[in-house]
Length: 267
Ligand SMILES: Nc1ncnc2c1ncn2[C@@H]1O[C@H](COP(=O)(O)OP(=O)(O)OP(=O)(O)O)[C@@H](O)[C@H]1O
Image (cartoon, rainbow, N blue to C red; front, top):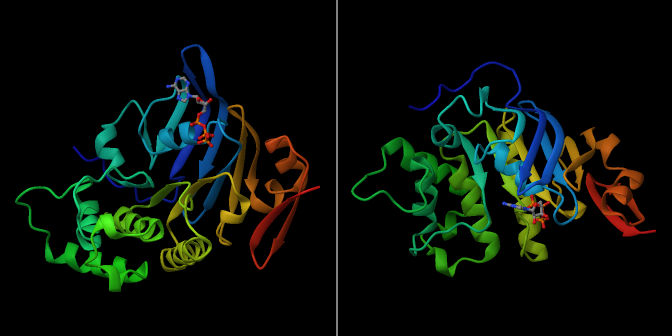
């Protein structure tokens, strides 16, 4: 049974004292995080820091070894995880689609939370209408009938965001959405994310990246992870400093912010 959609103003995500241990190794240690409606978090850290492991938990895709995780007010372990996952928009750039669906069809699979179209199921008029609106919001109207196998990486990325928004999620998780994009595609993606945030002020997002240049200007909060531990977490201005980023990546870098965007260069 689908868990009820929480309507309160409490956090959309709450992780308390979370450890993840696999084969005797701590992938995450002592993680605490609260994400509220309207907040846009960046999860940053070097390779192997534990970013994807944490995003996995936040998307109700796994359980912590210790501690608790609440997603949309539901504690993992006390709720049907599959049903909870259907309330979270999770964008995985390695979307495992096998058939050459059109952009419009891919977006419509968001209504059923499936990778492929559900056989013999007709989308409702509302779903068709919403898919059209989201395709337009993501600037894909002219490519709505293009087949998945003919899309560029950037177009796929934007189609997947539209797909994730079909069930009107209150939480969107983005795992390295700019990976493999050229400069123009990355900028289009960031513009789409900004439009999305402006148009849906209650939406909360968590975006994983290694690169400060890939952060949308509307990022409000950040968490820095290194070797499974949180080095700093909170408001972006306090977390994305030269000192913190240098420690996190174990390399002396200088951070600047210009027109809302961040840049890092070696010191
Ligand atoms: N099932 C597992 N068993 C043991 N170790 C694992 C398992 N899954 C991941 N790891 C290890 O946990 C660490 C954290 O992995 P994770 O994918 O969360 O890091 P990441 O910060 O997302 O890295 P990247 O930036 O390279 O994607 C890595 O060292 C990885 O090899």
